[in-house]
Length: 290
Image 1 (cartoon, rainbow, N blue to C red):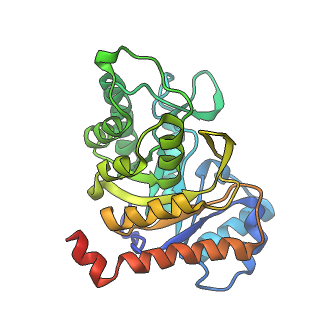
Image 2 (image 1 turned 90 degrees about the vertical axis):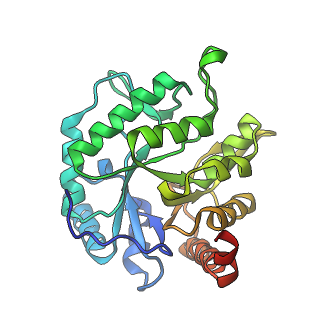
Protein backbone atom coordinates (compact mmCIF):
# COMPACT_ATOMS: atom_id res chain seq x y z
CA UNK A 1 0.00 0.00 0.00
CA UNK A 2 1.30 3.45 -0.91
CA UNK A 3 1.85 5.46 2.24
CA UNK A 4 1.92 9.19 2.98
CA UNK A 5 1.07 10.41 -0.51
CA UNK A 6 -0.63 13.81 -0.13
CA UNK A 7 -4.07 13.94 -1.71
CA UNK A 8 -4.86 16.60 -4.26
CA UNK A 9 -6.73 19.61 -2.94
CA UNK A 10 -10.39 19.60 -3.92
CA UNK A 11 -9.93 22.93 -5.70
CA UNK A 12 -6.96 21.74 -7.77
CA UNK A 13 -6.97 22.42 -11.50
CA UNK A 14 -4.66 20.34 -13.68
CA UNK A 15 -3.44 19.87 -17.22
CA UNK A 16 -2.48 16.82 -19.23
CA UNK A 17 1.27 16.25 -19.54
CA UNK A 18 1.67 15.86 -23.31
CA UNK A 19 4.92 15.82 -25.25
CA UNK A 20 3.74 18.67 -27.46
CA UNK A 21 3.31 20.85 -24.37
CA UNK A 22 6.66 20.09 -22.72
CA UNK A 23 8.39 23.40 -23.64
CA UNK A 24 5.46 25.45 -22.34
CA UNK A 25 5.12 23.36 -19.18
CA UNK A 26 8.81 23.84 -18.44
CA UNK A 27 8.66 27.59 -19.01
CA UNK A 28 5.43 28.52 -17.21
CA UNK A 29 5.60 30.21 -13.84
CA UNK A 30 4.47 28.72 -10.57
CA UNK A 31 0.75 28.70 -9.88
CA UNK A 32 -0.44 28.35 -13.45
CA UNK A 33 -1.89 24.93 -12.58
CA UNK A 34 -1.91 22.64 -9.58
CA UNK A 35 -1.11 19.20 -10.99
CA UNK A 36 -0.24 17.32 -14.17
CA UNK A 37 -1.75 14.09 -15.45
CA UNK A 38 0.02 11.54 -17.63
CA UNK A 39 -0.63 8.12 -19.12
CA UNK A 40 1.93 5.87 -17.40
CA UNK A 41 2.23 3.73 -20.55
CA UNK A 42 3.71 6.74 -22.35
CA UNK A 43 6.45 7.33 -19.78
CA UNK A 44 7.45 4.03 -18.19
CA UNK A 45 11.02 3.32 -19.26
CA UNK A 46 11.49 6.57 -21.18
CA UNK A 47 15.00 7.93 -20.78
CA UNK A 48 17.22 10.51 -22.40
CA UNK A 49 16.22 14.14 -22.70
CA UNK A 50 12.49 13.34 -22.71
CA UNK A 51 12.82 11.24 -19.60
CA UNK A 52 14.81 13.93 -17.83
CA UNK A 53 12.18 16.54 -18.71
CA UNK A 54 9.42 14.30 -17.41
CA UNK A 55 11.28 13.63 -14.18
CA UNK A 56 11.84 17.35 -13.62
CA UNK A 57 8.15 18.13 -14.11
CA UNK A 58 7.11 15.23 -11.87
CA UNK A 59 9.35 16.64 -9.14
CA UNK A 60 7.94 20.12 -9.61
CA UNK A 61 4.21 19.29 -9.67
CA UNK A 62 1.92 16.63 -8.18
CA UNK A 63 1.33 13.93 -10.77
CA UNK A 64 -1.80 11.89 -11.41
CA UNK A 65 -2.02 8.99 -13.84
CA UNK A 66 -4.76 8.09 -16.31
CA UNK A 67 -4.15 4.75 -17.98
CA UNK A 68 -4.91 3.75 -21.56
CA UNK A 69 -4.29 0.03 -21.89
CA UNK A 70 -5.48 -2.05 -18.92
CA UNK A 71 -8.51 -3.11 -20.98
CA UNK A 72 -10.57 -3.61 -17.86
CA UNK A 73 -13.47 -5.08 -19.81
CA UNK A 74 -11.44 -6.97 -22.40
CA UNK A 75 -11.68 -10.70 -23.16
CA UNK A 76 -7.94 -11.38 -22.79
CA UNK A 77 -6.51 -12.19 -19.36
CA UNK A 78 -5.54 -9.19 -17.28
CA UNK A 79 -1.87 -8.30 -17.83
CA UNK A 80 -0.81 -8.53 -14.20
CA UNK A 81 2.87 -8.00 -15.03
CA UNK A 82 2.00 -4.67 -16.58
CA UNK A 83 -0.21 -3.75 -13.61
CA UNK A 84 2.74 -4.37 -11.31
CA UNK A 85 4.96 -2.14 -13.49
CA UNK A 86 2.35 0.60 -13.25
CA UNK A 87 2.32 0.14 -9.49
CA UNK A 88 6.06 0.72 -9.27
CA UNK A 89 5.68 3.86 -11.42
CA UNK A 90 2.93 5.16 -9.11
CA UNK A 91 5.07 4.55 -6.05
CA UNK A 92 8.16 6.14 -7.56
CA UNK A 93 6.30 9.33 -8.42
CA UNK A 94 4.07 9.39 -5.33
CA UNK A 95 0.92 9.47 -7.44
CA UNK A 96 -2.23 10.22 -5.41
CA UNK A 97 -4.74 9.17 -8.09
CA UNK A 98 -4.64 6.44 -10.73
CA UNK A 99 -7.56 6.01 -13.09
CA UNK A 100 -8.51 3.89 -16.07
CA UNK A 101 -11.37 3.63 -18.56
CA UNK A 102 -14.56 1.65 -18.12
CA UNK A 103 -14.06 0.01 -21.51
CA UNK A 104 -11.87 -2.49 -23.34
CA UNK A 105 -9.09 -1.93 -25.85
CA UNK A 106 -7.28 -5.22 -26.50
CA UNK A 107 -7.60 -8.93 -27.20
CA UNK A 108 -4.62 -10.60 -28.91
CA UNK A 109 -3.17 -7.11 -29.32
CA UNK A 110 -4.03 -3.48 -28.71
CA UNK A 111 -6.88 -2.07 -30.77
CA UNK A 112 -5.91 1.58 -30.17
CA UNK A 113 -9.44 2.59 -29.30
CA UNK A 114 -11.62 2.52 -26.20
CA UNK A 115 -14.54 0.25 -26.98
CA UNK A 116 -17.83 0.10 -25.06
CA UNK A 117 -18.99 -2.72 -22.87
CA UNK A 118 -22.43 -4.32 -23.01
CA UNK A 119 -24.62 -2.80 -20.32
CA UNK A 120 -25.56 -6.05 -18.60
CA UNK A 121 -25.28 -7.63 -15.16
CA UNK A 122 -22.85 -10.20 -16.57
CA UNK A 123 -20.56 -7.42 -17.78
CA UNK A 124 -20.85 -5.69 -14.41
CA UNK A 125 -19.63 -8.79 -12.59
CA UNK A 126 -16.84 -9.42 -15.09
CA UNK A 127 -15.34 -5.94 -15.12
CA UNK A 128 -15.83 -5.40 -11.37
CA UNK A 129 -13.84 -8.55 -10.63
CA UNK A 130 -11.00 -7.33 -12.86
CA UNK A 131 -11.01 -3.92 -11.18
CA UNK A 132 -10.84 -5.59 -7.76
CA UNK A 133 -7.87 -7.64 -8.94
CA UNK A 134 -6.07 -4.51 -10.17
CA UNK A 135 -6.68 -2.87 -6.80
CA UNK A 136 -5.38 -5.93 -4.99
CA UNK A 137 -2.16 -5.93 -7.03
CA UNK A 138 -1.63 -2.19 -6.60
CA UNK A 139 -2.67 -2.14 -2.95
CA UNK A 140 -4.79 0.94 -3.57
CA UNK A 141 -8.15 2.09 -4.89
CA UNK A 142 -8.39 3.21 -8.47
CA UNK A 143 -10.95 5.33 -10.29
CA UNK A 144 -12.68 4.37 -13.52
CA UNK A 145 -13.90 6.84 -16.12
CA UNK A 146 -17.26 6.94 -17.85
CA UNK A 147 -16.25 6.73 -21.52
CA UNK A 148 -17.63 8.18 -24.74
CA UNK A 149 -19.02 5.59 -27.15
CA UNK A 150 -20.67 5.67 -30.56
CA UNK A 151 -22.60 2.40 -30.71
CA UNK A 152 -24.25 0.20 -28.13
CA UNK A 153 -23.72 -3.53 -28.12
CA UNK A 154 -26.91 -5.52 -28.78
CA UNK A 155 -28.19 -7.38 -25.74
CA UNK A 156 -31.59 -8.91 -24.99
CA UNK A 157 -33.94 -6.26 -23.64
CA UNK A 158 -34.55 -8.29 -20.49
CA UNK A 159 -30.82 -8.16 -19.66
CA UNK A 160 -30.11 -4.55 -20.58
CA UNK A 161 -29.18 -1.85 -18.07
CA UNK A 162 -29.05 1.80 -18.90
CA UNK A 163 -25.63 3.45 -18.83
CA UNK A 164 -26.04 5.17 -15.45
CA UNK A 165 -27.21 1.96 -13.76
CA UNK A 166 -24.29 0.10 -15.32
CA UNK A 167 -21.71 2.62 -14.09
CA UNK A 168 -23.18 2.68 -10.60
CA UNK A 169 -23.28 -1.11 -10.38
CA UNK A 170 -19.63 -1.46 -11.43
CA UNK A 171 -18.50 1.15 -8.90
CA UNK A 172 -20.38 -0.53 -6.06
CA UNK A 173 -19.32 -4.10 -6.80
CA UNK A 174 -15.71 -3.21 -7.52
CA UNK A 175 -15.64 -0.81 -4.56
CA UNK A 176 -13.69 1.70 -6.62
CA UNK A 177 -13.93 5.41 -7.36
CA UNK A 178 -15.23 7.37 -10.33
CA UNK A 179 -13.39 9.76 -12.60
CA UNK A 180 -16.37 11.71 -13.96
CA UNK A 181 -15.70 12.97 -17.48
CA UNK A 182 -18.18 15.78 -18.02
CA UNK A 183 -17.48 16.13 -21.73
CA UNK A 184 -18.19 12.42 -22.22
CA UNK A 185 -21.58 12.86 -20.55
CA UNK A 186 -22.44 15.65 -22.98
CA UNK A 187 -21.17 13.76 -26.04
CA UNK A 188 -23.03 10.58 -25.12
CA UNK A 189 -26.21 12.43 -24.23
CA UNK A 190 -26.33 14.04 -27.67
CA UNK A 191 -25.32 10.91 -29.59
CA UNK A 192 -27.63 8.55 -27.70
CA UNK A 193 -30.49 10.96 -27.05
CA UNK A 194 -30.63 11.11 -23.29
CA UNK A 195 -30.66 13.88 -20.68
CA UNK A 196 -27.11 14.81 -19.67
CA UNK A 197 -28.23 16.59 -16.50
CA UNK A 198 -30.26 13.61 -15.32
CA UNK A 199 -27.29 11.29 -15.94
CA UNK A 200 -25.01 13.64 -14.02
CA UNK A 201 -27.34 13.70 -11.03
CA UNK A 202 -27.48 9.88 -10.94
CA UNK A 203 -23.75 9.56 -10.38
CA UNK A 204 -22.64 8.75 -6.79
CA UNK A 205 -21.16 11.86 -5.19
CA UNK A 206 -19.17 9.95 -2.58
CA UNK A 207 -17.23 7.99 -5.21
CA UNK A 208 -16.22 10.92 -7.45
CA UNK A 209 -12.46 11.37 -7.13
CA UNK A 210 -11.84 13.77 -10.02
CA UNK A 211 -13.46 15.46 -13.01
CA UNK A 212 -12.29 15.74 -16.61
CA UNK A 213 -13.29 18.39 -19.14
CA UNK A 214 -12.29 18.48 -22.78
CA UNK A 215 -13.32 19.67 -26.21
CA UNK A 216 -15.10 17.69 -28.89
CA UNK A 217 -15.88 17.81 -32.61
CA UNK A 218 -19.29 18.16 -34.24
CA UNK A 219 -19.13 15.52 -36.96
CA UNK A 220 -22.74 15.93 -38.09
CA UNK A 221 -26.05 17.13 -36.66
CA UNK A 222 -26.65 14.97 -33.61
CA UNK A 223 -23.20 13.35 -33.77
CA UNK A 224 -20.35 14.53 -31.59
CA UNK A 225 -16.87 12.98 -31.43
CA UNK A 226 -14.78 13.16 -28.25
CA UNK A 227 -11.46 14.39 -29.64
CA UNK A 228 -9.64 16.29 -26.87
CA UNK A 229 -8.47 18.53 -29.71
CA UNK A 230 -10.54 21.67 -29.24
CA UNK A 231 -11.58 24.17 -26.62
CA UNK A 232 -14.21 23.21 -24.07
CA UNK A 233 -17.73 24.14 -25.20
CA UNK A 234 -20.12 26.27 -23.19
CA UNK A 235 -22.50 23.32 -22.71
CA UNK A 236 -19.68 21.37 -21.06
CA UNK A 237 -18.70 24.29 -18.84
CA UNK A 238 -22.34 24.53 -17.74
CA UNK A 239 -22.38 20.80 -16.96
CA UNK A 240 -19.16 21.10 -14.95
CA UNK A 241 -20.67 23.95 -12.92
CA UNK A 242 -23.70 21.75 -12.23
CA UNK A 243 -21.43 18.85 -11.23
CA UNK A 244 -19.80 21.10 -8.65
CA UNK A 245 -23.20 22.20 -7.34
CA UNK A 246 -24.63 18.68 -7.18
CA UNK A 247 -21.62 16.57 -6.17
CA UNK A 248 -19.15 19.10 -4.81
CA UNK A 249 -15.83 20.44 -6.04
CA UNK A 250 -13.12 17.90 -6.87
CA UNK A 251 -9.73 18.12 -8.60
CA UNK A 252 -10.46 18.86 -12.25
CA UNK A 253 -8.30 18.17 -15.27
CA UNK A 254 -8.34 19.96 -18.62
CA UNK A 255 -7.60 17.38 -21.34
CA UNK A 256 -5.96 18.57 -24.55
CA UNK A 257 -4.17 15.92 -26.61
CA UNK A 258 -3.37 17.62 -29.93
CA UNK A 259 -4.08 20.72 -32.04
CA UNK A 260 -2.56 22.76 -29.24
CA UNK A 261 -3.49 26.45 -29.13
CA UNK A 262 -1.24 29.19 -27.74
CA UNK A 263 -0.53 28.23 -24.14
CA UNK A 264 -2.38 31.30 -22.88
CA UNK A 265 -5.60 29.78 -24.24
CA UNK A 266 -5.10 26.68 -22.08
CA UNK A 267 -4.27 28.87 -19.09
CA UNK A 268 -7.51 30.77 -19.65
CA UNK A 269 -9.46 27.49 -19.60
CA UNK A 270 -7.71 26.49 -16.38
CA UNK A 271 -8.66 29.87 -14.94
CA UNK A 272 -12.26 29.16 -15.89
CA UNK A 273 -12.13 25.87 -13.98
CA UNK A 274 -10.83 27.71 -10.94
CA UNK A 275 -13.53 30.34 -11.26
CA UNK A 276 -16.26 27.70 -11.33
CA UNK A 277 -14.68 25.99 -8.34
CA UNK A 278 -14.67 29.25 -6.37
CA UNK A 279 -18.28 29.96 -7.30
CA UNK A 280 -19.38 26.49 -6.19
CA UNK A 281 -17.51 26.72 -2.91
CA UNK A 282 -19.19 29.94 -1.80
CA UNK A 283 -21.39 29.96 1.33
CA UNK A 284 -24.59 30.05 -0.73
CA UNK A 285 -23.55 27.05 -2.82
CA UNK A 286 -22.61 25.02 0.25
CA UNK A 287 -25.95 25.82 1.89
CA UNK A 288 -27.84 24.79 -1.24
CA UNK A 289 -26.05 21.38 -1.35
CA UNK A 290 -26.47 20.89 2.38
